[in-house]
Image (cartoon, rainbow, N blue to C red; front, side):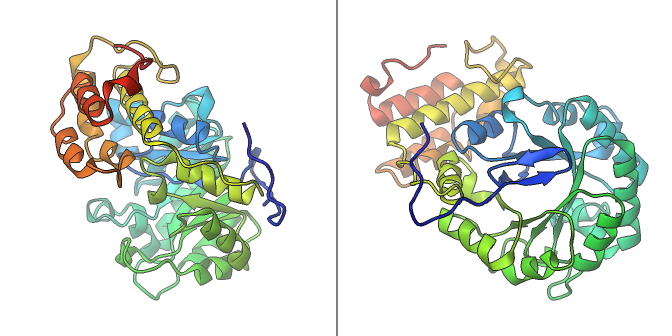
Length: 359
């Protein structure tokens, strides 16, 4: 049930991104090893975000038929609107990846020019394109011409700290037909260090006609409202604050919608959602429909991949609870869903799980 509107906070309007409506104007950031299908669904259902993005997909890996890359691009009806994010340094391979994303049902294609991780930048991809504006524009042009769905670009402020490259690039991208731009308000060489400089978002907003989404250091509804007010951005993208915490998104969305904040989840609810996340990811890894909760498949390989993938995330669902540190160590050793469930049953007490779906 929707919370009541707050009397002193007006609703922040949604915006159009090509033929899509992003409302509420809160977007889930693309995060490698985090924003897989099951997690995106949690962020839509619990967090009520206006748009979600996939993990980034390597255009070159897709070109060579990597099954994992194809799986990253699969979408469920309950997570729309959704953009598939792609990265690479070759315009034609990027265009090919964009066409594949559209074929698999993406509502939009997002080009990654913000990833600062050295193994990505060494290939001339991600934030490295900020140092090669001609190649960056060639990629944008090829992708925009390859698909009918709207195209967006996610950038850092620039590659080297203090050299604000985004305005010139953003104008060029806009001229090539990009329909939305997201600015993470740090430079690539910063990684996640220091504070995001929201003044850079305000400066970029002044030179663009297309929607601009701000990203960086939004952890609460108050942060989101301040970013909208200070920068004039059209949308706010939330990343790390959402990991294992779709309820944080729900509180941010409530703030921008002028609603009272929803109640904080109980520990029991957090554990239930953690286990739902695990079951859904097992089904996803097994190639089953992950949008619906159901019996786990008899696929030990899929189960092992999913459980190991979540070793670093599941403990975050119970972070701060008494005894959570000890449970974190146990969860990091689990190799099966049965082990996960056993650890968390012991943590909470079996009575809390009387109606937990069985295997």
